[in-house]
Image 1: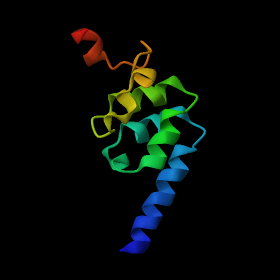
Image 2: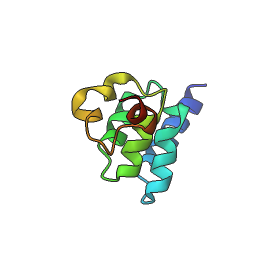
Image 3: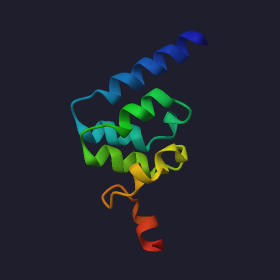
Length: 85
C-alpha cells in the first residue's frame, strides 16, 4: 500500500509540473489534492491564472487559501462568491 501512495504522490507532482496549464488546472480542481499541503501550495503559486482559479474553486482545498491575500484578487474569487458579494 505504501508504494501505491508514493506512486500516486509522484504522479501528482508530475502533473503539477506539466507544461500544459489545463492539466495543472484539472489537478487543482481534483478532490485528490485534499490533505496534500505541498501540492496545494505549489498550485496556489502557479504562474497561470487558470490553475489558481481552479484551486480557489475547489471545495476540498482548505480555506487556508481563503485568506484575504489569496482570495481578494477579483480574478481569483470563485464565481459563486462573486455573486454573493
